[in-house]
Image (cartoon, rainbow, N blue to C red; front, side, top):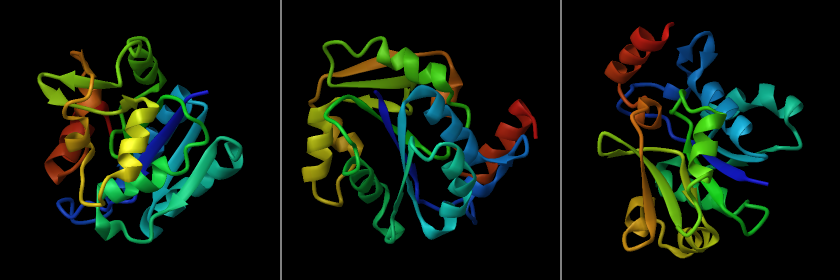
Length: 193
C-alpha cells in the first residue's frame, strides 16, 4: 500500500494569486495533481491551507477512505514545514511519494515508473534535461530525517549524501510545475485550455 504526500498549502506569490485554483481543461490544477496521486497510490495525504482546502472537498466523499486532509495553518513557514506535517501522517513505515499540487501532468503511470527502480536506493528522483522533478519516491529513513530536521531545512538539502537514483526521462511532465504566469500560459498552449 503506497502513500503519497501532496503539498498543496502554498499560494504562489510569483503568480499573484492562488495558482492551484487556476483551471486546466475545466478543472483546477490541484485536481489534476490529486487524481494522479490517487491513481498512483493507495492513500493520499494532502497538506492544504485555508485557501486550497475547498478544492479538496469534492474528492472527500468519493475517496474518503483514501484521502487524508492535513491543514497547514502556517503556510508562511514554507514548503518544508508542509512536508513535515504531511510526513507525520504517514500510516506505515514503507516507501512513500512526495508530490506537488502544482504539477498537473503527473499520472498514475509516473508513480509506477519510479516504483520499478526503487530496489536498493533510499530515494528515486525523476530528472528531465538535468532538472530535478516530482514526485520523489522516498524510503522510511527519509521520513525520519524529514521529521527530525529543523523547520528551515529543505528536502533538497536532506537528500545530499543519500543513495539517490536519478531517473532520467524525456517526459517534461515531471518538471512542469506552474510557478509563474508564463509557465501557466505555456501549459495552456501545449495541453489545451
